[in-house]
Image (tube, rainbow, N blue to C red; front, side):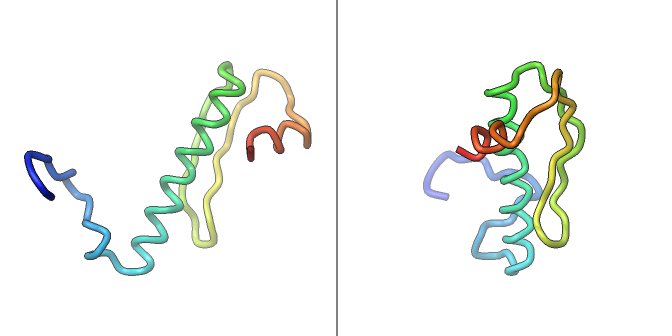
Length: 77
């Protein structure tokens, strides 16, 4: 920290994390980014759960109407 920043409680600096902790943090953050992207495109979507898991992450969504393969490309972009 360089100045008047307040550290986040319970969050380790990157240089103090193990590789696994860092990977878990990236997966957790990625789930939040996915949720934000979905909500931007489909604001009526309800978020359910989106944890990091052993080999990545996932997020369950309750869409107001079904989505298609084309919608997945929009979300990825």
